[in-house]
Length: 275
Image 1 (tube, rainbow, N blue to C red):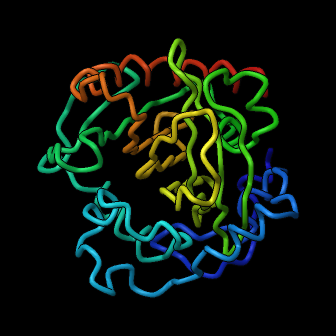
Image 2: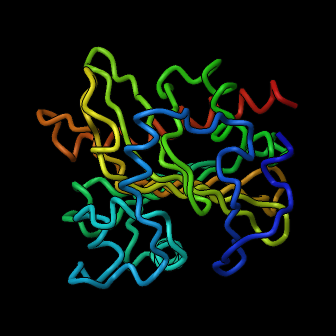
């Protein structure tokens, strides 16, 4: 998986991050299968890298996310820039929830956004000395299926301008499966020692409804870099609504720290197997 941090020319950059035009194909994932689905999605995807705030849309990045605007648009330079600005704000915006020696969880202070669950989680994985192994845990879907028992069924629907329209399923027993339709983009750090995975909601009509409950990924961004003390630093900023109407959002928020620690442990175990 060393290819996950390989060099390549790019169409646009935001700060130290540069878009990888090969997208998910960079890590060996299958391209969209030709057929009716691919044609349907291709006809709906808008390759619009202009300002994401025009045409009467909501004025701020957070508002656009929360109202699910731009669901037919590929990932743009502007939205990634706006995300980085949002994620970089401190305690005025991100309230501490839990912290221990290796993990930290914060949540957005505005509970009205993105269904009320908008969190920022970080972790230090000292044993993960090869960043490509950490990236593989998130990007190599065939390998991920061998160990991740919660999220699978990844299917690329369409690829354009470094953005992949992607479908996947999440298992939440004893409840019905949830499925998601998103745009996915990979950005590489200018140092060659980092990768940023940007995932944002896509038009749910790209994939007709299945037996699974159609959930919503407003945004999920994974930033993998070298940690100053050695190993890997992983920061995940996520706003996801699993569409469980009887489960209050305060309970969902309360479950985040334990689920994050569990996810970090799974990534660390798998990285040790890849080493």
